[in-house]
Length: 287
Image (cartoon, rainbow, N blue to C red; front, side, top):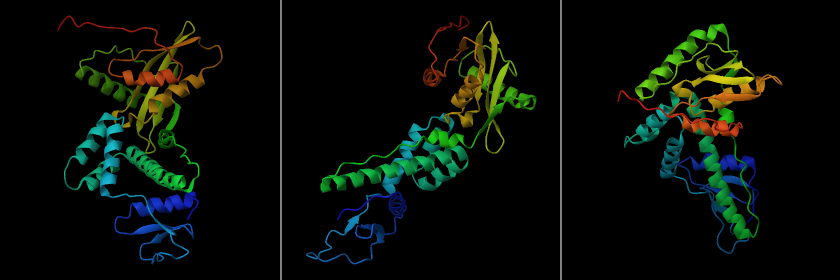
């Protein structure tokens, strides 16, 4: 029997899929999730086919989902912690949950990711049924989870009270680069003519961007984000706010140097319309 997959029904199916102790199915006549204790109709009954099993989902499915999330997480520090939790052998679900609880932003991304992926499983299952019914398949509108996570952060213009936190973050980034064998040019200016910062929902300094204008050219001198907040889109959000704050005719071009080791940010720059203008190579003669 055919039934409509409403948002409410999808939520009930998702909840039931995660209940490993229950036995659930769809009551197509009522359009609801029913307990497995209900007696299915006997063969030949006019209600045969009324009950349909839910999409298969067990602990192995949940573990594979956690693996995919951890492998694709863009912040290397949190990614390594999640991978380590999954490699424990025993108690991996609890270890994974405990690790995420230490990183609220990553935890929110996990819940959004899990819901989206499980809903996609439900859509695939429902489309297989629709194919049997001779109906067209339906799709799932993807959610921009990055934007939802960024709602927890605040962005504003840089203030003098932010100076110390900015200096501490800058030193942290410089030291990390040197440990990686990179000798970055330290041309820090706190703040520049145009500067914006970001802070977490808890008020922690998360990152900042600083730029100065000269001869109608705006040069972004610093764009730094704390290690634990990288991969959440904060850098791109800071860049977007800086560009949006430019007044008409204030600058004809915008330049930004991309340090070695941060080539991945080039995709962010490309989305904002930036094009490569110079590639700099260096040779350490002391080595």
